[in-house]
Image 1 (cartoon, rainbow, N blue to C red):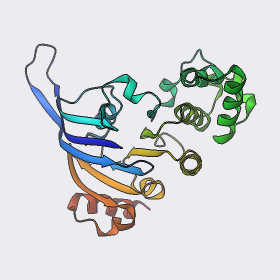
Image 2 (image 1 turned 120 degrees about the horizontal axis):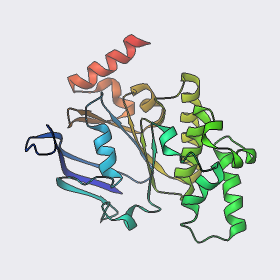
Image 3 (image 1 turned 30 degrees about the horizontal axis):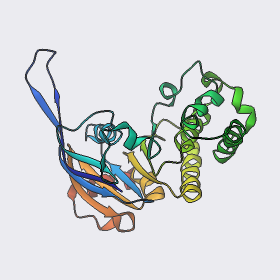
Image 4 (image 1 turned 180 degrees about the vertical axis):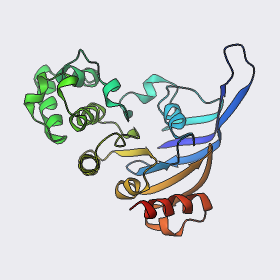
Length: 249
């Protein structure tokens, strides 16, 4: 279980020697339960991606704690094999000089597997994300956006983590490809028993994939609600986002 307790974050603004700071997260607290998919929903500038970086241990909170099964995510050994990530920019997530096979070998090398088992695992991962073994030797520039993101998902799944943080992971993809990737994530969730923290501005995608939704506004938690009760949200901000979604259909 992932526990976020009283987390706040500030950033220095106005240059290297400036003492001015801006608070981007304010006393964030929530729990992620094993196997669930929790959406973190908010507009640009709401603090979603900052929260994602803290959950992944890329940055540290200035106040509060983030613990996975009681251990701080600041510690690399806590995250390895437990928390993975898929980001919006799949192009920068892949080393341009690595083939798909070499990219998948990175997380698999952390596991104590025989070489033959590793090779079988690579083939299995590719099949599970809708690709085949012919993709082993391809480089990132030879992949479409949807294919590249599928490889990033396979890489995140490779270590069989309990939780994958997906930071706007489908927003750069075409509409039809988005649905395919959402269906893929649903299938992988069932196959591996893993859960997701799905950071997004897309309420419709969140409702399709997730169990609960947390609305984030200007670094504050506005409301946490089951996706089955989205129509009954109490926060005026959440209602506004829902109305915008309905209007844009």
